[in-house]
View 1: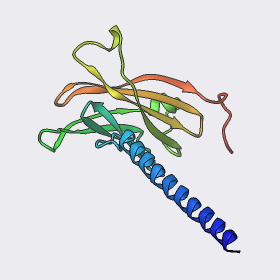
View 2: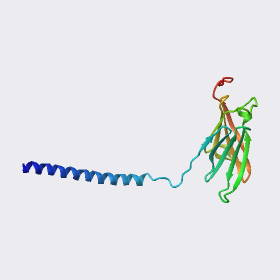
View 3: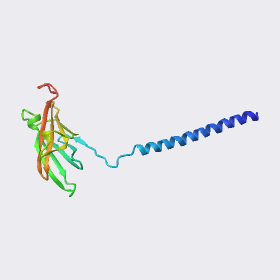
View 4: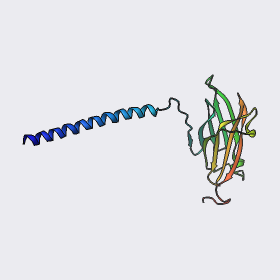
Length: 179
């Protein structure tokens, strides 16, 4: 009987010992992983939100400068505001109107706009010169007719620049719309 009790105690102690060693090794491995996968100290994130009458999105203008893009659904005007990182005040403002691109019949009433931004690094001869392109493309869609447009900001600095259309596309057959 004593021999059986000794065997059980030995097996129990060995099991606890192995569990402790496994825990310690696992803890050390997790600590090693934590040092390999560091959370970035600087986060660059774009965001977008749409409402009934306005859509807003952020996007990178340059390496350390972000822009706020706002689409007024009532007028079809797409704005971009840029804060000067040196002074912390509004440094530039640009605008264009998307109504002609996305509502060819000129209707500005009862539109169903959505807007998001995407990042791009333009290259090639078309994108050189004094008015360099921002790192963001703004995509605007009109849900009633299925037309979508892509726009970019070209700027020289301060308040010099423009928002220009890159292209317009159609997502569904002309005339097909929700009743």
